Length: 94
Image (cartoon, rainbow, N blue to C red; front, side, top):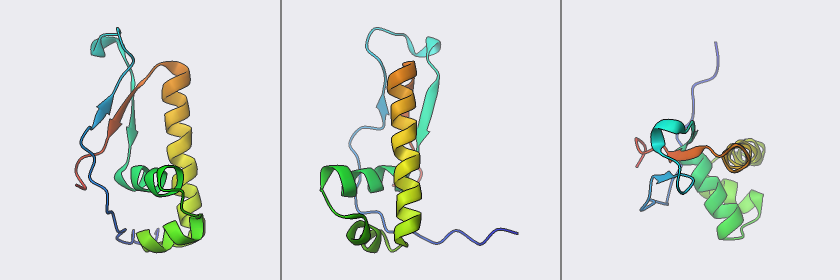
């Protein structure tokens, strides 16, 4: 039985929840789901420029967990760009 998922602190509420390649109809696209904690990790590390240890403390998670979340987010975004997929941002946690 896996450990219960701890609540993570999310301080960013995006204005946009969807990105897609221009000129391609939605019906022709696969999509990648970017979770709320993945978006938060990207914002703290890539946009705000925080170190992983500081960003993980802001999210109230361990640094290794933060690194795993960040790696997952980067992989999803790279996959969407390389393969021309849409990126859907999970809205249920906002």
